[in-house]
Image (cartoon, rainbow, N blue to C red; front, top):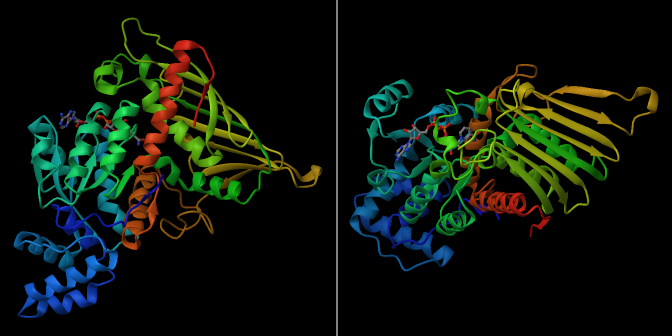
Amino acid sequence: MGATVGRIPRCGTGPTGSLGVLRRHCRFASRTTTLLRSADFLAKLFILISELNSRDAMVPVMLCGLHARRVASHMQTSRLNVAMIGHGFIGRVHSNAFHQAAHFFQIPYELNLKVVCGRNRATLEAMASQWNWEEVATDWTQVVTRPDIQVVDIAVPNVLHAPIAISAAQAGKIVLCEKPLAASVQEAEQMAEAARRVPNLVWFNYRRVPAVGFAKRLLDEGRLGKIFHYRALYLNQSGNDPSKASGWRYRRAEAGSGVSGDLLSHVIDMATYLNGNIAELCATTHTFASGRDVDDAAIVMVRFKNGSVGSFEASRYGVGCSNRNVFEINGSQGMLRFDLEDMNRLEFFDATQPPNLRGTRKLLVTGPDQPYAENFWKPGHTIGYEHSFIATLGDFFTALSRQEVFRPSFGDGLAVQRVLERVHKSAETGAWIKCN
Ligand SMILES: NC(=O)c1ccc[n+]([C@@H]2O[C@H](COP(=O)([O-])OP(=O)(O)OC[C@H]3O[C@@H](n4cnc5c(N)ncnc54)[C@H](O)[C@@H]3O)[C@@H](O)[C@H]2O)c1
């Protein structure tokens, strides 16, 4: 399921070759520096690349001059040029994360905000200037295959994820894609297949909230015992707000689905991350606004493979809730509860304590010895929404430099898409549907 981010794509078949060599940059950096200084640089570089390739027994080496020049520039600078497609809400969040990641994480790359792509040149230029992007472009097809781009970040409406990701992956780029991964399982399968040989991630950023990471640690340590219940809500009130309800999220042709792809996808990813795979589900969806062709609310009953039962609810009519992303887990030895609207806290009830000392503890998850305590501020100094994106990038590029597996990958995005498809099928038929 997880992509080994350091896996080297085949060399000699396009720009993937230079990317592959880049990934081994750290290991061979000192040797490369010596080579770069020498007069017969190109000949020696050729030999070095031959050695690198033979180690993985990947390909015969056929470096053209252009290729060699690209390799040399990567090796000297460790600079990765980023192209971001989309510059709306999440485009600003990603821009911030690209700027901040190396401030909080020791990553051996300089993330250079090279080009941002959108449709309206005026708003694009204003955004580029505010967030320090070097260039703007209005046609993504001209951007994602550019030889000087190493990272393509997808921050556009959902139905555009597949064509952009497939094109970027086929050009050998590192591909970062917003959730939901795709508008259908078929698209998600094509994306996962195209991205098999390139480093990739899907922005299920809530896995990187420290309180969520700490919940995962407590669960992995068995602190909750046998899990009985997993319940989750993701509610906002945008559907009840006419100014918001006219946007692309409310049109199937651009969003693929409604609240299910938008908010329920996060719930499914978080639930499977924390509580394991889903065995079967039964769902209902509802559309409140007449004439709208996407779901406004989704309610799902779930049986997990670990024997627990669960319920998921997502709605854009959760009036009173701005971004209420909640889970609560009951086990034989305790309870965990999280609410994104109070994201530095994790509630923990320890049922192994003597009865007269039991009570729900509201842990402030800012360290010490808690996730990202070493990366962000001192204990007690709280963090925000943006840090979950910074941590996602920090972990991703750390894994890339170490050739380690990173998750959530496109494989995880595909798994969520398969659950979403079953939600829609169950909502149509009223039947329980198995998830394999
Ligand atoms: N991870 C999260 O928590 C999270 C939060 C919000 C949004 N998202 C996801 O991010 C994506 C974008 O959402 P948003 O809220 O930023 O939307 P938005 O409407 O604020 O921005 C969409 C952007 O896409 C651009 N765009 C549309 N069509 C384009 C095209 N053909 N070429 C280039 N650019 C184009 C628009 O100009 C705009 O800049 C969605 O997939 C959404 O699900 C994820």
